[in-house]
Amino acid sequence: MRRGIAVQRHVTRVVATLLVSALAAIAASCTFGDEDRGANIDGLGSSLSKIRRLARNEGALRLVSLPGYAEADWTEPFVRETGCRIEATTETDPAKIVNLVGDGDYDGVSAPGEVAGELIESSDVAPLAVRLVPNYEQVQDGFVRTAHASDGGPYGVPIGRGPNLLVYRTDAVPGGTDSSQLLWDVTPTLTGRLSLPDDPMLIADAALYLMSARSGLGIVDPYQLNEPQFRAALALLRKQARHVGEYVQPGDATRIDSFRSGESAVGIARPAEVEAMLAEKIPHEAVKPVEGTTGWSDTWMVYARAANPNCMYLWMDYAVSAQVQAQIAESTGQAPANVGACDLTQAEGHCAALHADDEAWWGDVYYRTTPLEDCDDPSRGETCKTLEEWQAAWAELRG
Image 1 (cartoon, rainbow, N blue to C red):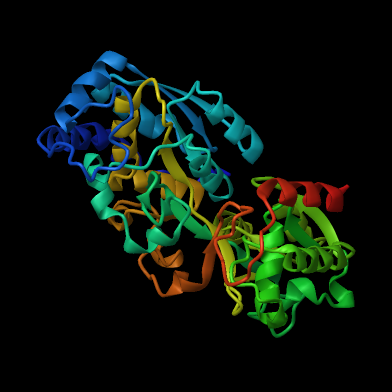
Image 2: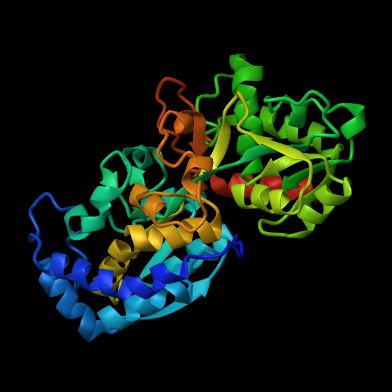
């Protein structure tokens, strides 16, 4: 989802200058050590200076990108300074993203959390050789909980993070609330006025609510559900469905219209949508529920057999720099992974509003991860439902 928020134009003009310095630092940095994960990609330079030189010879970078992550404002300076021309294919459908990467025609991908684990499991993406990405040192520690990292270390560079917020019209919910019960135990006055994402990951929102509402189910991770937990989440969604007025695709502006008219009164929204409601002067509140909430953190990952791995490594370092992070954070409405970006955003208070450097606030935000059959919980002795099973169940519910 991409919002047309004003982007700091003078940052774009200075990126080229700053990138020269960054690349000079890369060229002077260390070589591989035995501990460097991801250093065995065929064709990847054995030192940072070699990566820069080899990237000139590659001269190309093919990306699978979510919307808003490979825009001209920040790709053009990179192309000029590295010689790596960029060809980006924009895609939002998780299954199509996985298929595009698996076809082997791309060097990297901005992977949403729900497919990152699948790409790691299939060995389609390589672990990150952190020492070859100097700007990774500026990534906040809290991102180790997101989908870009595994127990063995990172599998890419995070782009940012965001929460899914409970939003409601204040004239429809007198007295207000900070509980997601509003979404699941729907009062008659709100029937037909719920606005929710048309997304299989809504199953995780139901599971998260059940973590507190029905603790006996034993849910510890809303994305890793065994059979009874999965059935309970689907039952809750089916009960909720009769109160839903609209299921909307991410970025669909019509939901702002429905909140403006009052047709919709309660929903789950991303920060960019909340900002749009503020701009439209819609009477509303947006809160992180006391039960916690789901969220997301997308990741740039390198294809394990990339034809242009050197360009991809330079791109990952560039994408996590403070300058580029500032632009992406504002244009997509999320908190940057590199907190240094907060000094460069145009909108005063952008990072404060999104709690960019407040790790305690993010403690009960459950970032999207891939639902896997092996849910790595021996204490339960159970297998969990896969992403494919989530998608099939959602299609049936919506059908």
